[in-house]
Image (cartoon, rainbow over all chains, first blue to last red; front, side):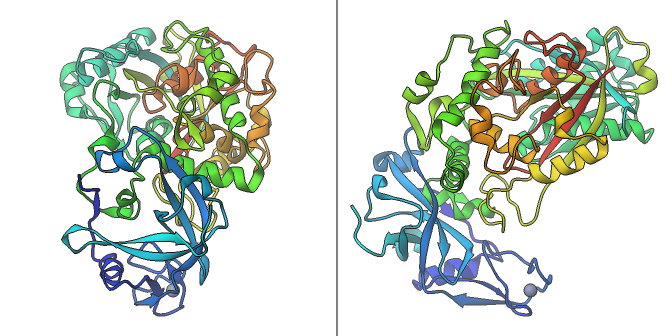
Length: 138
Length: 380
Ligand SMILES: [Zn+2]
């Protein structure tokens, strides 16, 4: 059973293409330099449409998390209970990205846990950014 | 717009796990009941406002009611955020002279019709493209993420959320229309299974079939109805900086929902403060939405919504602020919060099954964590 896949649009396509190259990139305003995520057409600070895609270190820390228990989508049935984490990125803690936490039991997740990005290749050339603890936990 | 319009009729079907009839039939039943209660003939209706998620169109309603001349109609978006705004838009249309009798409704077979999240497609666009691939698709997961951070920052506990559920159940036990009337204790809440940690089953609203409607009329028309009018004292909508729908995770102020914006405008319009509110109906798809709303609507300081819920403060009859006095979405019925509007009306009419004595001002809120709306109703 395949999990839901992202459907890239004009603004988000460069994000997913970068993931395919195992790079974590976010939008950066071509005028005022403010970073933003999720990808959007205009900078919320200066309304510029000029965009650069900045490569980030892929480091961050857990800002919040949940552990999903049944009932879940069929694609996730065999993983329950599983954690979904919201990660605040190192370069700019105001930037937050979701993902699953791999190589870590749900019981060992905590806010502030240092994580780094990894890339999970799925079908149809889709690559998802995922997260792993920087140091072994548990 | 203050007191330019009033809710003069309310109606609903029974609430059920399986209503056994189509949503549009239920919608019409609720609408006819609301008009009948007010003593207003369907032919007088010249405005309709609905949720954009509503499956029954204005056209279908107008056809069955035999409406001669529908002059005003509109749709409000964002699921449970829409409820109070349907009344708000009706009141604005009336204040602007564009309509004089406006019906608002919500009909939803959300129990027999299945769970929307279970129909998540194989490809997901929009902002959910950054959440659905990770299995974060259920509203309970989306809200749990916010609840967890609130617990971390302020020490909010699961028991605080449980106190909300217990209060709603106590009120539901007194309401013959409520679906869940068996007693519930905090221990029951704590023993209920985890659905999306930190949230448990008893943090979640019911899954219900049912329909509700209300009739909003001009001050002039309100003089000649069979019921005691509930004045629309203020109606607001809200969406703050860089906020999102459900996965409201990317804005600069993480624990702020669109309710903050709606609350500010609501009280400014009315020229009163939270201290003037006698009773509250808070959107309660999940318990943390109530504790957050207590903060955002100004009943306590940021971070104190959890402790505020304790000690019976939300319970009728002796609590400082009785909330969700019909049982709310947690124990009466979950029909996108429209039952909260009807209960807000009952409180200022003096006809609730958990009536706050002498209630003059009633607050109703719609979905927190989505673009939202709110109402202040006043006793006539
Ligand atoms: Zn800019």
